[in-house]
Length: 351
Image 1 (cartoon, helix red, strand yellow):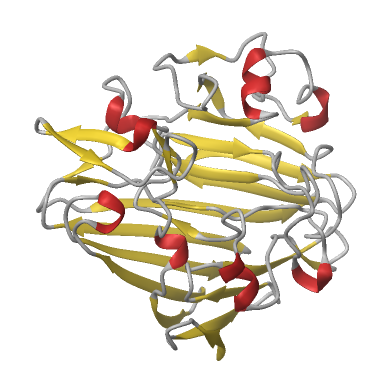
Image 2: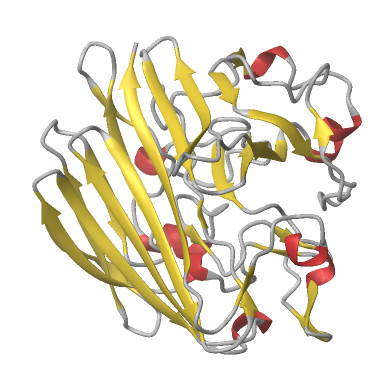
């Protein structure tokens, strides 16, 4: 475990970077600004390592703005229609930072705050505990939300992310992680030839502002059927109204969960050239598959890389978008005395 100074915020607050390395040589770097995972290496079928997540070289690049590269997202991952929701008959107005909607916690969500960090080691790997107190009224949310996110890089080449939160006032909470993956390497170009499996019979169709319609649509016979591993390129540009709304895939899938399993297999991702395979396991009911449709080379990444359209993808485990306004969706309400607790594991293998 290595701890170094990464940079300073405009107000002088120090941002640190932690380098975690497991017994097999896999490395992850994370900074206290936004809890951002700036680097994550994984071996290919020949044992050669590559950095497989998008990111920047220095703090100023992150401060200038990125599309949430590698960050912790909160208080609410994904969109809330009109930036409004109600609890016990009281309406709360959030920051609207996605046209007329609220997305990913607002203008200054968890991706733009400095977290406190505590590293640790076990016999099975290395980890980092990140904590942050989101004060009542932040970005419009009620309650003081005390948050803890734990990254654990295991010697089995897995990255486990555990989320916990408590509140002193009834609120909503939906945390996720927004890493962009390219299993061929962060600067290797498009990911549309990656093979994706999504363990879901249904997805949540959206309107033209990407807010769910409240329906659950069966994937059978649609471009949203990834029940068997399928190249993303096979259907991402077919004529379909949902793909027009998202400019490709930017939708939430409803994960199959068995009653007796702690974590469900949400997705697998495979890149044939390297042989890298990633499995996504989670307690969450949904996963947002976003195929980097808005990347356009405007953000300069690590080593001067210009991340082009569909140069990476996200698999964000989550509750469904706009759940506070959709009664038939799983609830994201958190009450005093309750503990928000969920986990996601990204497992890295080769074949």
